[in-house]
Image (cartoon, rainbow over all chains, first blue to last red; front, side, top):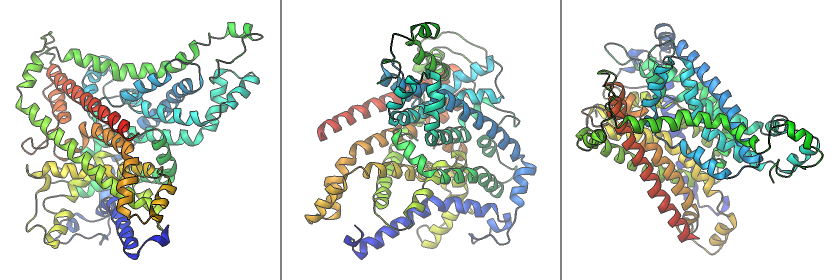
Length: 278
Length: 310
């Protein structure tokens, strides 16, 4: 294939590739570099990519003055709990739909999937009233319950797709050995599905980690607020602290990027096999 | 095929009687998911529908059934139509740009070149980044005074003075569209790439043997085969763009002068700033209905297209 390309085509392809690379990585690199520069350098006439002088001042501000670690801790609690629940509930339903005798499985799947298309703004008002009645405002619980439902459609769909690829013969063999329904799921299907569990877990985690609307509505106390709400409220009285914001952005995005890069192959496969959904 | 369907009825009957009836198992396993979706998705939709027919307010403590009065008010509310127009324009512009640029990127990634893996990995960065962070990042890149975008454009001679991107009603919505396009296009490209990779290589090789030019191959072979993927990806993208909230709320808060107000940010403000839950629910229900209509129209179009090509 390569030899059929003209020099011009090759140049165009590399030019395009460079464009994609700058598009994807450029803005965040800029943000990262901003987080390491002094405010004085940031407002100079000529912006610089390489920090000089180099400073960790903004990281200090983000943690010590703005208490970023509280938000990080809240986000970790909420996201990890959401991930665990999504995997448990999602694998139960995906297993039922894929492996058990059930009428209208595709209808049920479609209903579950269509739920993810509901505009979240239409859910937030009634859920706020409900959470308020139940005394769940400003709690992690309200966020975890909500995020479970937000992540569940995609998790169920991707796991269902994966379970469908596992050969039916193993069900037969397990049944011969006297393994029950739960045993089949727990001892056989789940251990075979580890790659898919990692992908879906990561997707659920990202969904919860990045969610803003419900967190904004349900929490008003920094003790229960998650990172997106924290960063959205990052302001100083007289100016926008771009450096501090950049430092906080780096802290919450870099771990995510590392996770995504490590599991990138699984993510792309999982998402495309599970249909198209952001 | 199914696990329990073919289980032998004899021999294990005593065991089966002790265990749950087989037909109940799948429903038992689906129960947690049903409970979760029923309480967090279906209940709020139905409850929102009901609230939209009341004058529920958390300030005055009103809570009376008032029929369709909210919808009459909505229909005559310039703020609603303003937000509606912005949302439709945002949805249209960002979906078209993301699909076209995404297709271009996918065509490049389809070719073999060294470093392709690195680029494919980098493309996940905008997708994984929290939208709030994207929003703040664009706030800094497009800052009216010290933003690097102004610096670059000035030095390229494309503008002759700093542009107050999201601080001016003329360019604020454009800035938000750019931020959305930046965040979503690479992911779109990866989806389209998997679609392109299902186009049989032999077909393209054969066309090349016959001396077909690259763009003819694209227009007559790749594009028609990619069309279903393209349309489905476009639909999901449009539905998602229609709900835009985080980007707008964090970058401009709907301003300046309501020039970036979208249906989501308007609903949110009516709900949580004025605490008019009745009227706010009418706004969000109207949005739900519009989104449903977009999905139906798109699906009809999709079905027709697929019928035509097969």
